Image 1 (cartoon, rainbow, N blue to C red):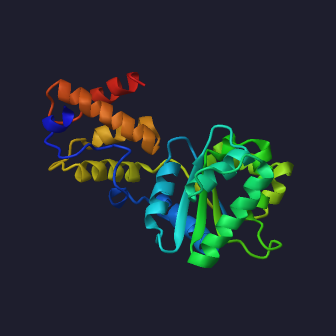
Image 2: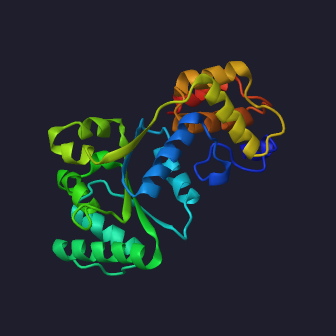
Length: 265
Protein backbone atom coordinates (compact mmCIF):
# COMPACT_ATOMS: atom_id res chain seq x y z
CA UNK A 1 0.00 0.00 0.00
CA UNK A 2 2.67 2.55 0.97
CA UNK A 3 4.71 1.62 -2.12
CA UNK A 4 2.00 2.92 -4.41
CA UNK A 5 1.46 6.01 -2.28
CA UNK A 6 5.14 7.00 -2.54
CA UNK A 7 5.45 5.82 -6.19
CA UNK A 8 7.98 3.11 -5.33
CA UNK A 9 8.72 0.20 -7.66
CA UNK A 10 9.96 -2.07 -4.89
CA UNK A 11 9.77 -2.54 -1.13
CA UNK A 12 12.47 -0.67 0.80
CA UNK A 13 13.93 -1.97 4.07
CA UNK A 14 13.14 -5.55 3.10
CA UNK A 15 15.31 -8.49 4.22
CA UNK A 16 15.05 -10.12 0.79
CA UNK A 17 16.97 -7.33 -0.96
CA UNK A 18 19.26 -8.80 -3.64
CA UNK A 19 22.91 -9.20 -2.65
CA UNK A 20 23.93 -6.85 -5.47
CA UNK A 21 21.77 -4.12 -3.92
CA UNK A 22 22.99 -4.32 -0.32
CA UNK A 23 24.41 -1.19 1.29
CA UNK A 24 28.22 -1.63 1.57
CA UNK A 25 29.03 0.03 4.90
CA UNK A 26 32.68 0.08 5.95
CA UNK A 27 32.24 -2.61 8.60
CA UNK A 28 30.18 -4.74 6.19
CA UNK A 29 32.95 -4.65 3.58
CA UNK A 30 35.61 -5.41 6.18
CA UNK A 31 33.65 -8.35 7.58
CA UNK A 32 33.17 -9.84 4.11
CA UNK A 33 36.87 -9.39 3.30
CA UNK A 34 37.95 -11.14 6.50
CA UNK A 35 35.59 -14.04 5.89
CA UNK A 36 36.74 -14.34 2.28
CA UNK A 37 40.26 -14.76 3.71
CA UNK A 38 38.93 -17.59 5.88
CA UNK A 39 37.43 -19.29 2.83
CA UNK A 40 40.53 -18.92 0.67
CA UNK A 41 42.91 -20.15 3.40
CA UNK A 42 40.59 -22.91 4.68
CA UNK A 43 40.76 -21.91 8.32
CA UNK A 44 38.53 -20.92 11.24
CA UNK A 45 36.91 -17.50 11.43
CA UNK A 46 34.53 -15.82 13.87
CA UNK A 47 31.84 -13.24 13.11
CA UNK A 48 30.08 -11.60 16.04
CA UNK A 49 27.80 -8.64 16.49
CA UNK A 50 24.78 -7.07 18.10
CA UNK A 51 21.35 -8.57 17.48
CA UNK A 52 20.09 -7.23 14.16
CA UNK A 53 23.46 -5.80 13.06
CA UNK A 54 23.53 -7.92 9.90
CA UNK A 55 25.48 -11.12 10.59
CA UNK A 56 23.18 -13.31 8.51
CA UNK A 57 23.23 -10.71 5.73
CA UNK A 58 27.04 -10.80 5.68
CA UNK A 59 26.92 -14.61 5.41
CA UNK A 60 24.38 -14.37 2.59
CA UNK A 61 26.58 -11.91 0.71
CA UNK A 62 29.65 -14.06 1.35
CA UNK A 63 27.92 -17.05 -0.24
CA UNK A 64 26.97 -14.88 -3.22
CA UNK A 65 30.58 -13.69 -3.62
CA UNK A 66 32.15 -17.17 -3.69
CA UNK A 67 32.90 -18.89 -7.00
CA UNK A 68 30.74 -22.08 -7.05
CA UNK A 69 33.44 -23.78 -9.11
CA UNK A 70 35.79 -23.56 -6.13
CA UNK A 71 33.55 -23.31 -3.05
CA UNK A 72 30.44 -25.01 -1.69
CA UNK A 73 28.69 -22.99 0.99
CA UNK A 74 26.90 -24.83 3.80
CA UNK A 75 24.69 -22.86 6.17
CA UNK A 76 23.90 -24.47 9.53
CA UNK A 77 21.66 -22.98 12.20
CA UNK A 78 20.02 -24.83 15.09
CA UNK A 79 18.77 -23.57 18.44
CA UNK A 80 20.74 -26.23 20.32
CA UNK A 81 23.41 -27.46 17.92
CA UNK A 82 25.00 -30.79 18.82
CA UNK A 83 27.70 -32.76 16.96
CA UNK A 84 25.12 -35.22 15.61
CA UNK A 85 22.90 -32.43 14.27
CA UNK A 86 25.94 -30.62 12.82
CA UNK A 87 27.25 -33.62 10.90
CA UNK A 88 23.77 -34.64 9.75
CA UNK A 89 22.89 -31.19 8.39
CA UNK A 90 26.31 -30.82 6.75
CA UNK A 91 26.07 -34.19 5.01
CA UNK A 92 22.55 -33.48 3.79
CA UNK A 93 23.73 -30.23 2.20
CA UNK A 94 26.64 -32.14 0.66
CA UNK A 95 24.20 -34.40 -1.13
CA UNK A 96 23.88 -37.33 1.28
CA UNK A 97 20.08 -37.85 1.54
CA UNK A 98 20.09 -40.26 4.49
CA UNK A 99 23.14 -39.82 6.74
CA UNK A 100 23.76 -42.60 9.30
CA UNK A 101 22.52 -42.14 12.86
CA UNK A 102 25.59 -43.30 14.79
CA UNK A 103 27.90 -40.40 15.59
CA UNK A 104 31.05 -42.35 14.70
CA UNK A 105 29.65 -43.23 11.28
CA UNK A 106 28.56 -39.61 10.78
CA UNK A 107 32.07 -38.31 11.48
CA UNK A 108 33.70 -40.88 9.21
CA UNK A 109 31.34 -40.15 6.33
CA UNK A 110 31.68 -36.39 6.82
CA UNK A 111 35.47 -36.58 6.53
CA UNK A 112 35.24 -38.85 3.51
CA UNK A 113 32.76 -36.66 1.61
CA UNK A 114 34.53 -33.39 2.46
CA UNK A 115 37.95 -34.75 1.50
CA UNK A 116 36.60 -36.23 -1.72
CA UNK A 117 34.88 -32.95 -2.63
CA UNK A 118 38.19 -31.13 -2.34
CA UNK A 119 40.54 -33.74 -3.81
CA UNK A 120 38.37 -34.88 -6.71
CA UNK A 121 36.54 -31.67 -7.57
CA UNK A 122 38.83 -28.96 -6.21
CA UNK A 123 35.96 -27.55 -4.17
CA UNK A 124 36.44 -26.21 -0.64
CA UNK A 125 33.51 -26.70 1.73
CA UNK A 126 32.71 -23.46 3.54
CA UNK A 127 30.63 -24.22 6.62
CA UNK A 128 28.91 -21.28 8.33
CA UNK A 129 27.40 -21.98 11.74
CA UNK A 130 24.97 -19.19 12.63
CA UNK A 131 23.73 -18.37 16.15
CA UNK A 132 26.87 -20.05 17.51
CA UNK A 133 26.20 -18.70 21.00
CA UNK A 134 23.41 -21.30 21.30
CA UNK A 135 25.50 -24.36 20.44
CA UNK A 136 25.82 -27.08 23.04
CA UNK A 137 29.11 -27.41 24.90
CA UNK A 138 29.68 -30.76 23.20
CA UNK A 139 29.50 -28.98 19.82
CA UNK A 140 31.86 -26.23 20.95
CA UNK A 141 34.37 -28.88 21.98
CA UNK A 142 33.86 -30.70 18.67
CA UNK A 143 34.98 -27.70 16.58
CA UNK A 144 38.69 -28.51 16.58
CA UNK A 145 37.95 -32.10 15.55
CA UNK A 146 35.82 -30.84 12.65
CA UNK A 147 38.88 -28.99 11.37
CA UNK A 148 41.38 -31.80 11.88
CA UNK A 149 42.31 -33.68 8.70
CA UNK A 150 45.50 -35.66 8.03
CA UNK A 151 47.03 -35.33 11.50
CA UNK A 152 46.07 -31.64 11.69
CA UNK A 153 48.42 -30.71 8.83
CA UNK A 154 45.75 -29.85 6.27
CA UNK A 155 42.07 -28.92 6.19
CA UNK A 156 39.84 -29.04 3.09
CA UNK A 157 37.18 -26.91 4.79
CA UNK A 158 36.70 -23.37 6.00
CA UNK A 159 34.62 -22.95 9.14
CA UNK A 160 32.86 -19.74 10.18
CA UNK A 161 31.23 -19.35 13.59
CA UNK A 162 28.74 -16.48 13.66
CA UNK A 163 27.11 -15.41 16.91
CA UNK A 164 25.85 -12.62 19.09
CA UNK A 165 28.04 -10.54 21.39
CA UNK A 166 27.98 -13.14 24.16
CA UNK A 167 29.73 -15.63 21.86
CA UNK A 168 32.89 -13.52 22.19
CA UNK A 169 32.76 -14.03 25.96
CA UNK A 170 32.12 -17.73 25.43
CA UNK A 171 35.32 -17.97 23.37
CA UNK A 172 37.35 -16.50 26.24
CA UNK A 173 36.49 -19.33 28.62
CA UNK A 174 39.05 -21.98 29.50
CA UNK A 175 36.97 -24.72 27.89
CA UNK A 176 37.06 -22.86 24.56
CA UNK A 177 40.82 -22.21 24.62
CA UNK A 178 41.60 -24.99 22.07
CA UNK A 179 39.08 -23.45 19.66
CA UNK A 180 40.20 -19.88 20.34
CA UNK A 181 43.78 -20.76 19.40
CA UNK A 182 42.59 -21.98 16.01
CA UNK A 183 40.84 -18.73 15.07
CA UNK A 184 42.71 -16.92 12.28
CA UNK A 185 40.31 -14.09 11.49
CA UNK A 186 37.57 -12.25 13.35
CA UNK A 187 34.98 -9.66 12.35
CA UNK A 188 32.64 -7.61 14.52
CA UNK A 189 29.42 -5.89 13.45
CA UNK A 190 28.10 -2.98 15.48
CA UNK A 191 25.60 -0.22 14.85
CA UNK A 192 26.38 2.12 11.96
CA UNK A 193 27.34 5.74 12.48
CA UNK A 194 24.87 8.62 12.10
CA UNK A 195 26.23 9.37 8.61
CA UNK A 196 26.10 5.71 7.58
CA UNK A 197 22.55 5.40 8.87
CA UNK A 198 21.50 8.32 6.67
CA UNK A 199 23.31 6.82 3.69
CA UNK A 200 21.72 3.43 4.38
CA UNK A 201 18.18 4.87 4.43
CA UNK A 202 18.80 6.83 1.22
CA UNK A 203 20.29 3.73 -0.42
CA UNK A 204 17.27 1.60 0.50
CA UNK A 205 14.86 4.17 -0.94
CA UNK A 206 16.91 4.56 -4.11
CA UNK A 207 16.96 0.80 -4.67
CA UNK A 208 13.16 0.80 -4.26
CA UNK A 209 12.82 3.47 -6.97
CA UNK A 210 12.22 6.63 -4.91
CA UNK A 211 12.62 9.67 -7.15
CA UNK A 212 13.08 12.15 -4.29
CA UNK A 213 14.01 11.98 -0.57
CA UNK A 214 11.21 10.85 1.73
CA UNK A 215 12.99 11.34 5.07
CA UNK A 216 14.05 14.93 5.89
CA UNK A 217 17.31 15.41 7.81
CA UNK A 218 15.65 15.95 11.18
CA UNK A 219 13.70 12.71 10.70
CA UNK A 220 16.88 10.83 9.78
CA UNK A 221 18.40 12.09 13.02
CA UNK A 222 15.44 10.64 14.88
CA UNK A 223 15.87 7.31 13.05
CA UNK A 224 19.47 7.10 14.20
CA UNK A 225 18.55 8.14 17.74
CA UNK A 226 16.03 5.31 18.04
CA UNK A 227 17.86 2.60 16.06
CA UNK A 228 21.45 3.22 17.20
CA UNK A 229 22.46 2.33 13.65
CA UNK A 230 21.36 -1.32 13.92
CA UNK A 231 20.11 -2.33 10.48
CA UNK A 232 17.22 -4.52 11.66
CA UNK A 233 15.92 -1.67 13.84
CA UNK A 234 16.32 0.83 10.99
CA UNK A 235 14.41 -1.44 8.60
CA UNK A 236 11.51 -2.00 10.97
CA UNK A 237 11.31 1.62 12.10
CA UNK A 238 11.45 3.14 8.60
CA UNK A 239 8.96 0.72 7.08
CA UNK A 240 6.46 1.33 9.89
CA UNK A 241 6.96 5.09 9.54
CA UNK A 242 6.33 4.92 5.78
CA UNK A 243 3.11 3.00 6.38
CA UNK A 244 2.01 5.52 9.01
CA UNK A 245 2.79 8.45 6.70
CA UNK A 246 0.94 6.85 3.79
CA UNK A 247 -2.14 6.25 5.97
CA UNK A 248 -2.14 9.99 6.75
CA UNK A 249 -1.70 10.90 3.07
CA UNK A 250 1.66 12.61 3.72
CA UNK A 251 4.26 13.08 1.00
CA UNK A 252 7.16 13.01 3.48
CA UNK A 253 7.88 11.12 6.68
CA UNK A 254 7.77 13.32 9.78
CA UNK A 255 9.18 12.91 13.26
CA UNK A 256 5.70 12.11 14.55
CA UNK A 257 5.55 9.11 12.18
CA UNK A 258 8.82 7.82 13.62
CA UNK A 259 7.57 8.30 17.18
CA UNK A 260 4.34 6.42 16.45
CA UNK A 261 6.33 3.66 14.75
CA UNK A 262 8.45 3.35 17.90
CA UNK A 263 5.30 2.81 19.98
CA UNK A 264 4.44 -0.23 17.82
CA UNK A 265 7.59 -2.13 18.83
